[in-house]
Image (cartoon, rainbow, N blue to C red; front, side, top):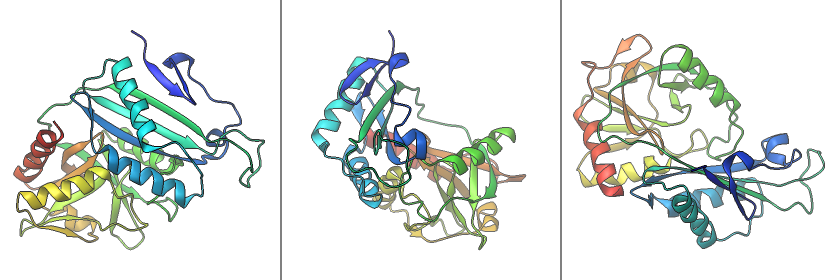
Length: 278
């Protein structure tokens, strides 16, 4: 069965889904997006994703009238149409089609594109390698914009170094986040540390959910910046996102983290997150 996608009111075979060449998402990266995890045919944390989508739209002054209920119906239909049990749904809103000019068009209708695909999710995951790279992004990383070129360059660098993720480092030596994830570490006092929400990072939905789960398990979560040296000397490192869920990092550059094995806290949090989602 061919995949089905959604483009501006139409459900189409994935290989026929397209937008106009002058869509501002293509011309300028003028849009925002969300990725929603699907587990057991259920949308995970959809309300939080929708809330962040609305915030991103507001931050770039993009008026988009489609309601939360309507978007949820679209996503659920794609789950059914694509026979998805576990998977990912990508939704993107751009400012729409208009003659190419930098200023915002006055009468363009926003474009909504939604795609869905199945993935395999394992309860356990092996530790991964990550590398560090300079964070070269703009200063509004809290907006989930489709302008992802620096992230793509960082991720490609990771791939070329046989790594799972690129961890981005700011001018002051502190880590912001991964190219497509948030980074966490467990220090010597068994505190779980992750960077505090600000314009410096995209405050992940999985990050928010995991903070709540950590509290339930009586883990102490501290939100503050930390350095590469602190990460290298951590008891555990892991990244979170809708795609990574909770993925342990057991090597950073050429440094093995602790004993090089998946740590008990990251393993417990991954298991707890999947159990909660189901």
